[in-house]
Figure 1 (spheres, protein in one colour):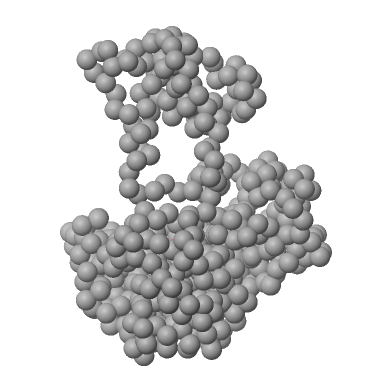
Figure 2: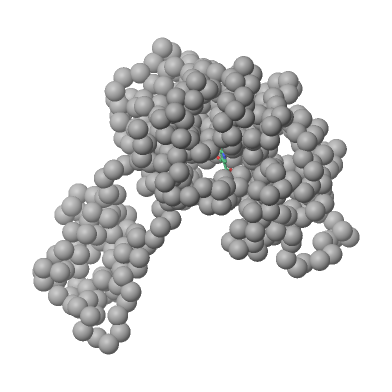
Length: 477
Ligand SMILES: Cc1ncc(COP(=O)(O)O)c(C=O)c1O
């Protein structure tokens, strides 16, 4: 079974309206230079929000079909039939036909809502401002050791940071990684992108967890890969199912987030880790261990990363500072055999000529300082408190209506709510009440699931968020 990217199959409303207007223009109902109905009156006529009409008109303007003039409203372009000597390119068509696919519409909507409105954010996969060690980072910026050279960095990233990361990985993740085997990327996301672009080709079969963060990423489908699902169970994916998929489809690579998985919070069991590594080594199938979360474990017990157990060199390890320091630093890294790292670094150089020195410089200072351990300690305590606050608030409010296993680390809580309700409608009702979450289908889950992120909101906001969500749930039931 080829799992196509999940998401709304129907076009967003504003696009449908833009197409209707375009048809009315081409049928001659509105001639070149004529005025289109005002945003307000068209919204009323069609029974939609004015913002939907604004988006539809923006769309037509970008395609060169209408012009918008201060005081005159929206007019059909004079040049709509291509009579004038100049012609506006069909930007809309161009934006829809490029090979790199856009984000899923609902993901774009959630991002818009969190950026534009004052909502309690239980959707964005990052830390709340009070969990980011801002003061410490500020103190580490000393004009005296301002980077000496502001030229292009080495395509694998700053040498000093790579050395620091090598020590960090030894100490915190039991991973041996010399600086030559590390490459710095713009978050874990860029490392995933580089792997997909450089090590795979259209038509290749890859296995990904379901549900998973990967389901929300169009980058696999943009690269023409065929994705196959490995269901995430209580103890993570079942290596026997991977073997089965491999028999049927010749799996070329496996993408896993085995430590506090996004969205389920699951930890892959040690037995399954070992079985998986044995299968990977027997069949020469690389495992991409995407691990932004292992240091967020609520307890201090070390997590046996796949890479730390990898005796045969079949694992490429990816991590970042997003979930443990700050998402805006855009510091991620990948560890692997030198041939692979050099290939990826060559591609990164072509994409962006290497990573900016400033975040690398800051990350180096922070990871090498004694403050890092203190910060991780505090972070773990704070995340555990937020997790418990959310878990118990949901339990108290929803009782048997909510099913959740809880997490022992990470920043996400995965829930299933009883009854039949529409994810889209629940999200709309929740946004109206000032709270936002991510519907489960965006991760490829069966209906009825919701992902709440407890790392982004403050502890004090969580009870109010649950209350608002409960009202939305009642309204959409
Ligand atoms: C599993 C997983 N991988 C990768 C990323 C990308 O993170 P970043 O690029 O900010 O490091 C995320 C972010 O949500 C994630 O959850």
